[in-house]
Figure (cartoon, rainbow, N blue to C red):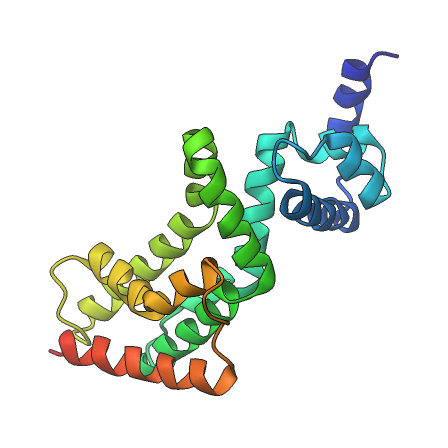
Length: 211
């Protein structure tokens, strides 16, 4: 049986979530340690403890796998339900919850390594940089924008451009400190410092968009 025939057969079978997760975990580790070009599907299969055909049954190519790994990393810390705004929810509490999750994500070792990798790849391969942005940051921004639209519609905030407001919120959370962390000039903020920063960002954001 050819590889194509085998892959066709595998596509018709139920996918094993545990194997998919093992593949994603292996891919994240390898992409960070070996880079995109230095990571092969064979290596991912070996590290995940599955066959190469199993990898291809879940992810059609390395680019698709990379995008899925980026999305999975974002979802670990910032699952989409975190952006919910129910009728009885307190907006400052919701924004603080999102802010804490965002700080935890962006200051994690994996996220810092990944961002450094993408900064080095961006000049060589702009398409990979775009893929990274679309798979992770763009989806987070979109969810935040939807939440802010709800807040505006409920007259909790005054917003001319919810998309720009979402970028402003996350931009304030990152601050200049994040660039210092990326280039090795500073350590990520600790829990107490991070919490204080989140509270201040939420306060300033709400004050600037108060009805």
